[in-house]
Image 1 (cartoon, rainbow, N blue to C red):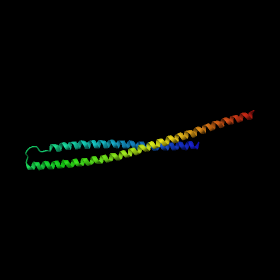
Image 2 (cartoon, one colour):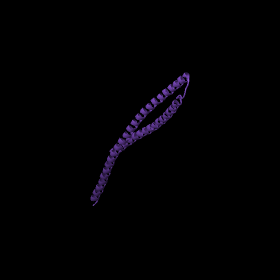
Image 3 (cartoon, one colour):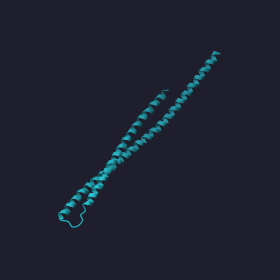
Image 4 (spheres, one colour):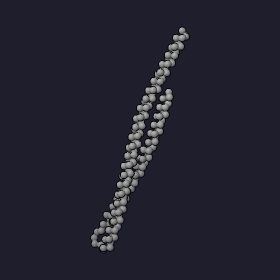
Length: 150
């Protein structure tokens, strides 16, 4: 029966590991949601900047000073646009890293579940054999006592 107890301890250890991996996957899922919100915000700001750049387009005859001022404003807006594009790339990289970690944890969870099922099945068969042996031994003891009583 010592095997049965140790097996149950090992299975509980696997369960604790699995719970830890599950917590990690939940944490990563929250981080992915936050990254998605940041990405959406960057896209909105980027679209707003593009509209501002389009509004800076000069129509008609203007003075040279106005033309230069509009060009400087467009340059500033385009540099901000470039910053948002860079931020979007960084967010995409972070998202990929998080997805890889999530996949890793899910693979670990699946491996632990498989291992736990195999071990659990084995220990249940060991316990069933032990109980059958004990039952047979009890029957043999009863028959032996009945033979001595006669």
